[in-house]
Length: 176
Image 1 (cartoon, rainbow, N blue to C red):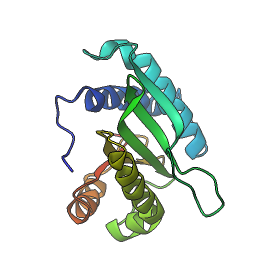
Image 2: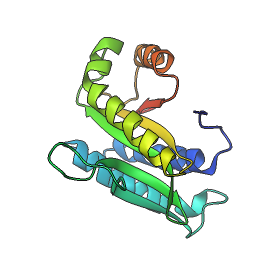
Image 3: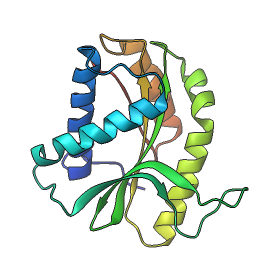
Image 4: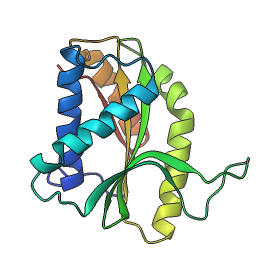
């Protein structure tokens, strides 16, 4: 699976939305209490930045809790991905979210917290790709305990996960 290129419009859209989320968080305009708050505000930022990214049009949309066609969990419910960016209703960028109220976690701790997300995202990517979708996965880990931005040590720890799972994109924030 290829990684997201800097000139990919979905990468740029997410990056622009995350900068807005960063700004809102650091200025205390956004004070999350849980992962749902994070998801809702990211969705808001994606909508708000839609017109700021060259190439993003109204043919590009955001889907929350996207249901994977033909899939099911052990309880019989369709499997889902937190947020998907689409083009003409076709999935292009799949985003799984995880949050922490701390300002640091080791790679091992992050991997333990992300284990289910990693497994689900990998399985869902395989299903979507078998259906012909050209999708790219991102796991976004947000550290609410760090108003001034993540410390460089978190980025180093995240690189351990990037090396271990090269087919997944791992992003973290907030940025300094």
